[in-house]
Amino acid sequence: MPELTATHIALLVIATVIGAIVGSVMRGRRAEQEKTAIGASWQERIDAQRKEHDRLTEQNKGLMEQVSQFQASTHDAKNRARELSSAVREAFERRDELQREIKDIRSNLETVLTERNQLQSDIAAKDADADFLQQKDERIARLSKELENWQNRVSPLIERFRERNADADRLETELTEARDRIRELEESRHELEREHTRIEPVTDPEELTDGLEASNDPVDDFADEAAAGHPLADDTSVTEADSGEPVEAVHDARDDLKQIKGVGPAIEKTLNEMGIFSFQQIAEMSEYDIDRVAQRLKGFRSRIYREDWIGQARELRDRVVRA
Image (cartoon, rainbow, N blue to C red; front, side, top):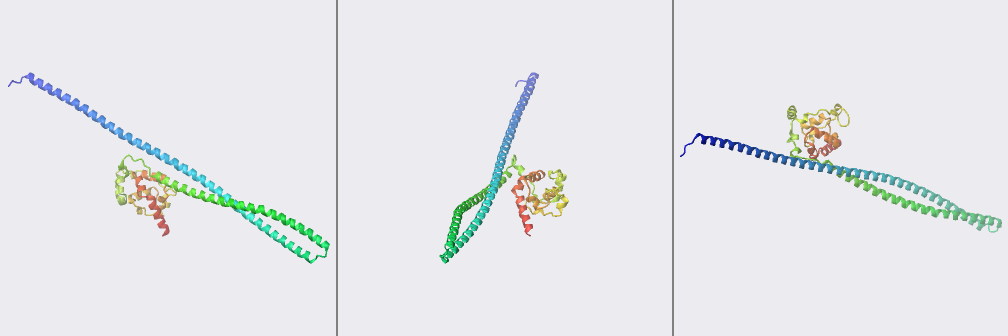
């Protein structure tokens, strides 16, 4: 076995150092490549989420435009219905007026016929008096002419009455169709509004809930979370109810909001701090009010719709009113 000299040992040491340096450089390059790949993957996920958010925003804009169009169409239909109602009312008034005129004409005709019959009776009783007969003939001729004139006037009036009656029936039919169209437009608008209010750009499924079981959370736990910096306790800027009345004024008529499924003591306390004390206020919440509550209760926007707080509040309000 050959002996190891200092030169051999030095070469081994140099080779070891060179190998370590080369390995370190290769590990650094591999780490840089892995870092680049991870960054590209994250960038792709961020771009995909941004595209999904843009798509949902465009869809929301389209639905809002459709709602605006339906509202405009409903407004036009209502205006048309009012015009038709006025036309129908005028047609009925004109028809009543024509009926009164026809009644007066018939009464005059009956009077003329009575006078003619009386004159004919007088003529039969006084055939011997020529002058009287001549006067009677003249009077009969005059009355006959008046009778003919009245008869000529009755026919156009009857025809006009029939035309007005037909116009009134047609306008009443159009009014009924317009009311049906308004009802269909209202139903379509409500359906679009319900679809619109449930469009939410969700980038992380875990954001749908924060893991908080609202209906079982005690007030003490909420206080602990507030002391720890929980977002529910950060915003205390809202101190009045939506109606503009002070909190003290609404406090006297407060309801037990915990009867709503999904509302526990902690959420009830937060709603009270925002000026919401009754089922009536929750039943009449608008999109703006829901956004305001969702900003205070982080991650609760989807739960408000999913658990139907507004529908539950309406049922509880109606139940209290009936009681």
